[in-house]
Length: 240
Image 1 (cartoon, one colour):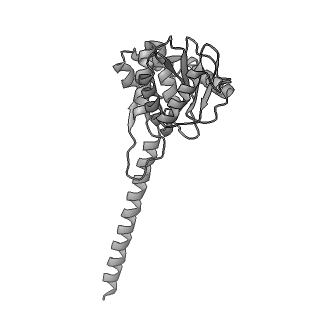
Image 2 (cartoon, rainbow, N blue to C red):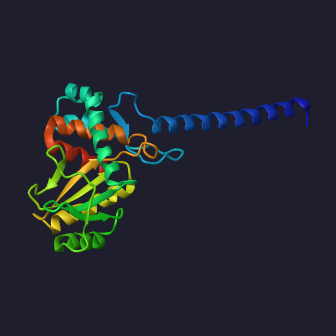
Image 3 (tube, rainbow, N blue to C red):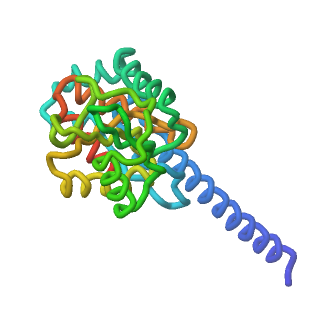
């Protein structure tokens, strides 16, 4: 084999390797962009775990959600950047800390007349949640809880006059919270008129980098559109 041919083969080989490395680098850049946000605080990535190579995380555009909910776009954007909205999320977190919540979902079933109830140990199956609900209704083996009572500032689904309340501290990007929300919805149906669901924010920033943005967006939706808008945002975040 001539020396010139060997040189050509070596050059071709080097070009192939270079092309492969450039392609890999381009893929990694794409993944990093997928993990990040837009920088505006308006469009966020709905993913609780890093995207694998070649995957694209689903985008949740909260500005578009606000428009669909009939909220004023400028007011919504101003709210999402405000200290007031951030403080509302922090206030929920503070009551969760007082109640002893260390992870999500952190939930309690409370008899609002006595202030006593039970702590729900995580995202339990429906049969377990039903057993705890029946226990609270029967008034057996209840304890005085440190969870803050429901106030007019809480976001409540179900009969607001119901005697019993399921108070949940949740993270929109927590997979167990998404699962547990379905369980709670069934409880509201089966105990219609008896129990209400209060959703409180507990974003776990270290695990889910975009979750606080979503919590703030939901609080702004509530401020501008009431509970209907809040639950529309919440349902969208939990279902994605």
